Amino acid sequence: MLSEQQRVRSLDPHVAYDVISGAVVQMLFDGLYEYDAHLNMRPQLAAELPRVSPDGKTLRVVLRPHMQFQNGREITADDVVWSLERMLAPQTHSPGAPLYRAIVGFAAYRKGETPHLAGLMLLDRYTLEIHLSEPDQTFSHLLAMRFAAPVPREEVAKLGPEFARRPVGSGPFRLSHWDPGVRLVLERNPHYQRELPHVDRVVFEEAISVETAFLRFRNAEVDVMTRVSPPDRAVLLRSQKWAPYFEASPSVDVWGLVMNCELPPFDNEHVRRAVAFAIDRERWARVRSGALQPTGQMVPPQLSGYDPKLPHRQFFDLARAKQEMALAGHPAGLPAPVTLWFPESAAARIYAELTQADLASIGIRVEFKGTTFPVWLEASGSARTTQMSLGGWQMDFPDPANFLDLLHSHARSERESTNRAFYANPRLDALLDQARVERDASRRRALYREANDLVAEDAPWAFFGNNLVPQAWQPYVKNYRPHPVYWLPVNEVWLDLPKRKITQLARAVLPWPGFRASSSLARLDEEAP
Image (cartoon, rainbow, N blue to C red; front, side, top):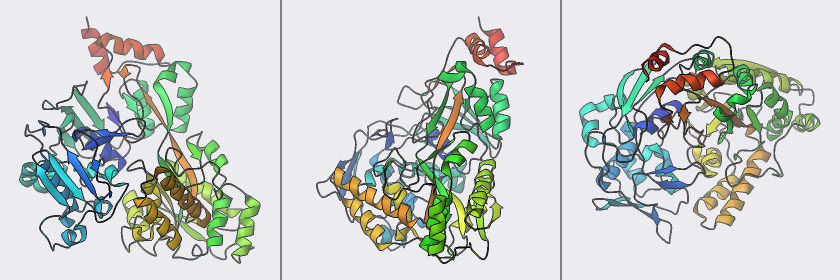
């Protein structure tokens, strides 16, 4: 049993982009490639890693033979080509489509000028080539994203828009039934070629608050907790018995205040720097009970380009913040308040209040605009709309380009902009363009470090840091560990049997009084020999 406070939006791998939908899609669909726990890419449906030509402009992908969709049909290279074209077709509305713009013929295909993508070439039943208009050292990673997962065309044709609710994939689980916003049930895929999964069924409950989920976790009615509130985290930390079943792991993400560089007062770099120096990140980490890892830069610690001694790393320095306000022409503070937009949640509200308190010390009054997540998403991605917003980015693939390219001028658009700061710097663009094609690893790392430093100095974001995600699992849930790429990595989980031991182990380690086994566990315990 799993639960989340958010709702699953779509089960179409070419459309799903939020973390929760992606977690379920990962159980339903295998991709061409995947990542291990050390961020190394490895083949999944593919037989080997992509073969890249000497000029870096052609990638050859070879599939494993006899891999099957959940309807029992073999997966071929033609399915991969068709699926990529479907994902890139404008009518699919895939948020991942712009990432694949380096494929030859991308623009013409998107405009409807050609029926097929010129850069996709089918060589034989299990082999295809992808031709790029320019070398791109990140493109192999794009083939490991769920946007590149093959889907069966006959099922898409039969189901139409309903495919997003009744998907037919290739992963270890298949959909049993789904009551959107309430409960989703997955069952073992009988056509799966690997010796997975080890459990017969996964029940995923949606829109459950973390407080309610933890109460049920205490009663062994929820098997894995992926989000734990600070008070409940303290409960777990007080008991040494929970140490093997609890981990606060660093997420590969970045969070901060996003300042709109097209709108005053944040069109002034000195005001932006003042905000960056006014944020007391260490105090914020204490308030969040250690759930925040301050870094003061765009690139997370797990990726190249990160530097704990970055020359322009952002940190708390109130005197420096006031100096920057004076350089901006506002030594006594701003004459008018600024509006901070954020998607309503308990954590976002805390960060908003901390922002308000810290910026008051340099004469910036902050007013709140709390909205639903969809409203915040649309507003913060629309030009000249939000002065300042709480923002973040969760890694798509383990490369610094996935973070720094968010601030490339090409990422700006009037609507649905991924560059939510609407920031532009020709020097940054040049660094990122050069790093994207650079094949020498050390040189590429140096370019991203320079770009990371430039962004920290210009401060389109005031970076808080990265999340430390507390997760807990029941003692009978084996082989579960938080993964740096995949949320809820349960594909290889197994339960400790015989069933009697489930209840016994839970009772042995749960430190709180009044524990009772859930009705289902109690029944299993009675039926066990």
